Amino acid sequence: MSKMTVAEAAEHYKVSKEAIHNRIRRGTLDCVIEHGIKYVVTGDAKSIPVQNSAGNDKYYSYIEQENSALKAKIAELEGETRSLREQREQMLIEEKEKIEQIYKERDAQLKNVLQVVVSKFLTNQNMDTVIEEAVASEEVRYDDPADDVIDVLDEEHDLVSLKQFLKLKMFSKKKREKIASRFAKHAEDDARIIVSDNKFYLKPNHFDYSDLIK
Image 1 (cartoon, rainbow, N blue to C red):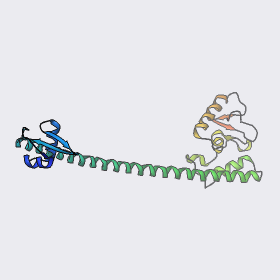
Image 2 (cartoon, rainbow, N blue to C red):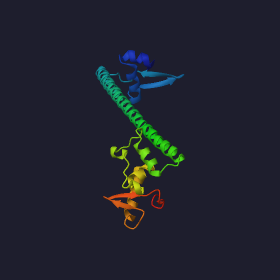
Image 3 (spheres, helix red, strand yellow):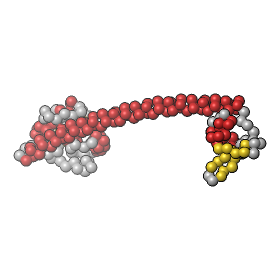
Image 4 (cartoon, rainbow, N blue to C red):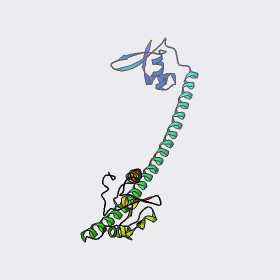
C-alpha cells in the first residue's frame, strides 16, 4: 500500500483533482491526513474507470452550459426590470410635475381672487360689486367657463346664486356638494333661500348663512 497527494493521484488516474475529491467523498478512494495534508491511499483501492471520468466531464460541461444560459437569462431579465423601473420613475416624475403645475396655477388664481376681494373690502364697496369683480377678473380661470360670469338673479335685491357664493368661499368640491344638499333640504322652509329655475339664490348682504355652511 502506498499513498500520494491529490494532485499526484489525479495525474496517476488521468482525471481531474475534483474527480479525486469526489471519489474520496463517495468512499471509493481511501485517504489519510498527515500534518494537515490529505493523501490518497493506493494499492487495494479501485482505479477510476476512464469511462466514468469521461461521463463526469461531460456532465460537468453540461452543468456549466446550463449555468451560462441561466446567467444570460438572469442578465436579460435584470435589464428588462431596470428599464421598466426607469420608465415608471419617469412617468411618476412627469405626473408629479403636472400636479405641481396645476396647484401652482390654482394657487395663483386663488391669490388673485383674494387680492381683489381684500382690496375692495378695504374701500367698503358693495358685496355684490366685490364678488362680481373678483369672478370676472381676467386673471381668474375656473373649471367651468360658465362660472366666469356671476349668476345674479336680481341685482337690486342682492341675490347671488349658491354656486357662486360657495365657489368664492373656496370650499372643496366635496364640501360644496355637501352644503348644496343641506340648502336643498331646507329651501322650502327657510325664507333666506330663494329658489328659481331649480337654482338656489342667497342674500349675503342681508342674512347670515353660517348655520347651513359648516
